[in-house]
Length: 197
Image (cartoon, rainbow, N blue to C red; front, side):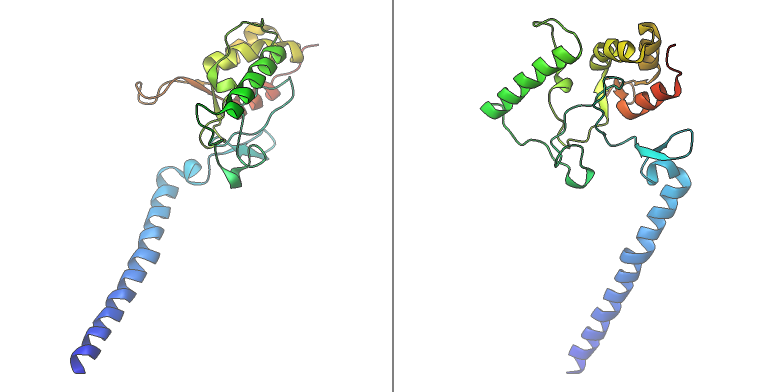
């Protein structure tokens, strides 16, 4: 009986020490390190406008439907761009539903951007990402949309193209991924420009 009580006491003591370390001290150390080393990222990469109002996160896509704005990748997250319900379509490459939705998206993209019926369309313009919340589009997608945005805002195309170039992020570490454009940051930069008279 003495041995059982001694082992029970030791087990309870070890459990309490581990609870304090792993549920208290370690998370607190990680939080404090993140706040000290990269506070913007640790707090959600929030994007604020010139008035100080939070407009979103640089890590999450938002739906922009007006012709005045660059539009993100399609989203299958919840009812669309729902950060609480991140998901892809889960449709496989042989799915007829996926093929039909891509065909419809290609036609809509060509119409919205004034492209010829046989013009190539960037894949990211008509397919959702795995999370449905990818904040970035390809440079090719942004360059195609630039004509529509310039026309809708009454801006010269070279001005809009310069904004796209200024908001293009290169490959990670110079090797990984493709160059990309963050839609929210680009659209906020557009809103800071005065409209053409």
